[in-house]
Image (cartoon, rainbow, N blue to C red):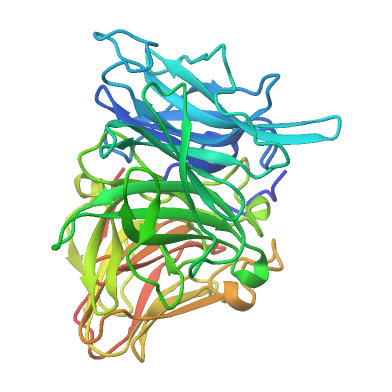
Length: 462
């Protein structure tokens, strides 16, 4: 079990399971007026174990109703990550035109008698709660000699007018097509050539976004890297999809990261929404099981609306939180030295030149972030309890520095929630998601930035 927390670190506006372990978000789909969030879940312990799909629904992406476990292990294996779609035209035949199904596709991890394989199965629900597994599972067997073959993400392939799917396969992704969500043909591959980060590829996603010069496709790939390589992070590529495979628009000088922080992994987007909305797992594998959160372990990032923006370095993926506005109390100005309005709030700072913002508590613990020499930085080395892990706030995990994409004036939007902080710089073109565990709540804001305009803060009322 995880270390019992010294105090309650459960965030108020970020999704957490009622108890026990969670990691990757799965099966994000909007159907019949509700957002569905499935997630990797071990219902018997606060560490990773036999995977199930937990399930919750929401009408606003902030308040979640917990539902019974959606999918449990069976003779084909445990239930790893995957996706879900609203089959509005009943192409699968699992529902009716009047009551179309939600269809989930997931990896089953099978290990027995010296055999380890990963194959893809499907299940469906007509009431949004209870699932029926397809009798012909698996629909995509594991290729002989392969182990890492997982995390199917279904999307609508408008070019071929069919369903598409992207699947992680070790050091690359593979693309598939189907007319009915049951029978699949492989159409192409992407990777590992190009500027790809090292590590096993996981939890891919492919989606289309508008730009001033026409649409582009974004391919997300989460990288399960070791500690020396930066831990769990998500890379993205911008380019073109011809209905069969993906091609990057340009060769980048370095990997592009969805999030520059320490804790945002395995993020995927919702099916059947007007805009592209992403949720990620707010943790990192090198220390996730040791986090001092008591009877639960693991949470999600805030939902983020994604867009592509033109920058001096080319097209970049921007992320901005959504859903909070109705729950923010009136905005007020805050000065250096003023008390903070509780443990959950949104902070907005605009500046020119250097600016450092600090959150401090009565124990002398300080969390620092801001802009220095046009570098975006976050420092949690003295921000709270780090005794639970040798990795969490040591070396490259204690401070993150990233050169800004833009120069000149800057704006920083911050959402702090008990033990989670998300920072969105320059309209979300760069972001950081991080955990911190102060022994007592942060109580005061400090500002070392004479050129920064007065910050504005809004408490978040549940």
